[in-house]
Image (tube, rainbow, N blue to C red; front, side, top):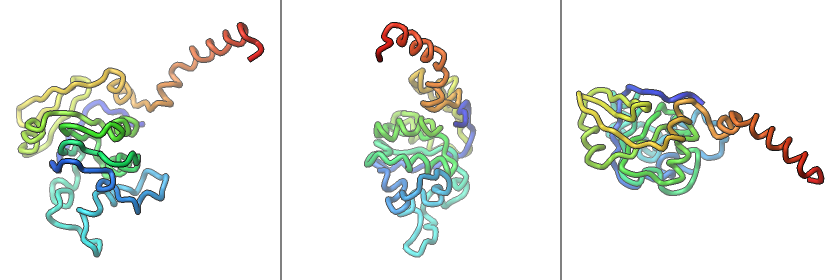
Length: 195
């Protein structure tokens, strides 16, 4: 997994509440286990018309947001089903960080497993970030978001922070403990050879 240390990029505002995983990536695109190629289907039902043409009013179809790496979202982002394709689609589009007042639990966990930093900030703070013209900077090590000379601090679980800073998924974190695991297994065999 790619490390996440800091990010400076365009932040696209999509402050709608209760954006569910079916809106993020509709069910008809869930037939793949490949993580690439899903970005073009991101927000499909509100990004394109019935003929597949871009809707010019949708934020990700407008400049400079076509190249957004940060998504500013409304409360309860990622609610609905537990589909991991939702963070896959966001990541494939280029989104590395989502800032919202709240997240659905499973979606929140899936973000960390896929190299996306979800940051909970209050709705007034997210709205203030949406008013900034120009890029935002997210510094995970310092736990700050900055832009236009202003700074917002955020809280982060130390274990999740380390996972992103080191670019480790759950398997990678487990593999770091492999010597201790092997020592425990060897000791257990000596104490209980019948197992």
